[in-house]
Amino acid sequence: MIEFNMPSLGADMDEGTLLEWRVAPGSPVTRGQVVAVVDTAKAAVDVECWQDGTVLELLVQPGAKVAVGTPIATLLEAGESAASVHRPAPAQAPAAPPAASVAPPAVSASRPRISPAARQRAAELGIDASQLSGSGPQGAVTLQDVEHAARPATAGERTAAMRQAIGAAMSRSKREIPHYYLSENVPLGQAMAWLKAHNAELPPEQRLLPGVLQLKAIALALRDYPQLNGFWQDGAFRPAAGIHLGVAIALRQGGLIAPALHDVADKPLSVLMAELGELVQRARSGSLRSSELADASLTVTQLGDQGVDAVFGVIYPPQVALVGVGRLAERPWVSDGQLGVMPCAQFSLSADHRASDGHYGARFLAEVRRLLQTPENL
Image 1 (tube, one colour):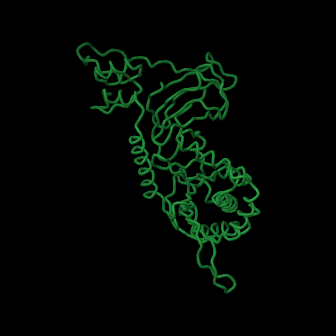
Image 2 (cartoon, helix red, strand yellow):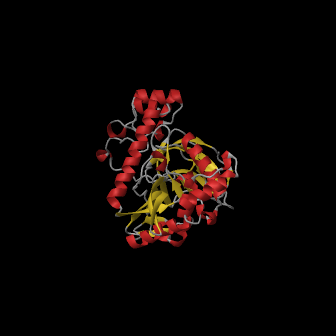
Image 3 (cartoon, one colour):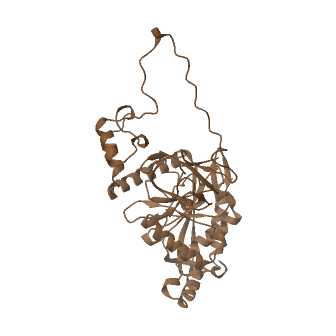
């Protein structure tokens, strides 16, 4: 039997609210299939199953707020049946003590504390109060808790919750990760000339943006500098299985999210451009998948379109590096002893000193710079 737990959809997620089940007991499921929708502080996320099986039991009702890692369903593996699954026998009650020492019965630990008004309102709304987190004394569920569970959060509430989650994750990152920072001014004259010629032959909807060339160059460089592409977990560096770049996307209602583009180094620029456009659209409409929020192995934040010369980001744990890209602008440039003007962008690296050092990071940025001088090979 497989326990399907509430997944972690990022370092800034401690709990999520189950909005909807997309399967029922007895349903066959396959790896990658969307089985539930979970609301985080940032978005409603389609949660994918990570293994083939058959749904045995749904343990959590829609509307419940659940901590990351808590079992929310059980699945049968291939060849298992409900009858063959071992279920632990209920614990036997201890022998009753002598009558003189019998204490007044305690409130059952499994029975939630809830005010009468909250219990009545939960029944009216069809909400399972046992699944709610209480904000009253000793964790009691209040009428306000029930009403809050029954209505969708307002835009202001969602933005405030997102800011709080981001702030908590970034505070933890700065406190626990020994950051080091590097930057490199990268000439992009050849890249922009190639891009102009390439786009001239395409309809507007198929044209490439400079940011796609930057993402591809970063991904290709990571092939040679794998210590920046992975995770710091359990006191050691664990390399990622693929190069999945988290792309920082500003949301229209405020806040930030960084879903992953998968296998960036292996895809043509045209495919990356299409996938990036779709990812931005789905991020802003709140229709991301759990794999896109859990798989990023390095995050890239491109703030050039906001007019900033450089950005030095905070690492998104458990990742070990973040690349920032500033605005593309014409700057004085010396080539072969001649002063001229060159379109350039400032690339920065924020990296975890436990996984790499400044010399390694500097060589990585130099490789990104080198790759961008031959854009036709990206």
